[in-house]
Image (cartoon, rainbow, N blue to C red):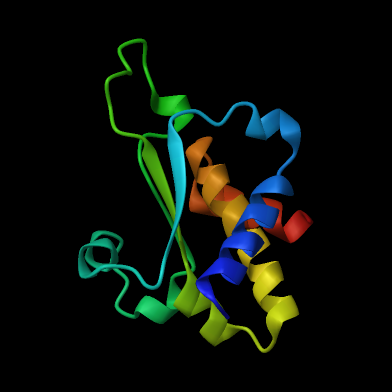
Length: 123
């Protein structure tokens, strides 16, 4: 899949987030990378770059105090190669991207991995 086509899927994934949450996104960038860096893998203790679809790096909204400011944006990275390698077709890529975008935005709002997994099971 081309980078441009993948970017469209990420955009669609963002647009699938309910408006009430999109309005509350604050100081966060969503980027696409081919694969995670060694530093990113080391930070979260993951050995294979092919099992990481997305990564949130930043200060969750619920942990930002009154002195929060003058900081670089939080970063949500969607990893194209891992998603493409795990999907059997373009439709599955689209679904994984949508779920990954939702998952990482949930981290931005302060949900931990366990809470996110519980919500995903209820979907």
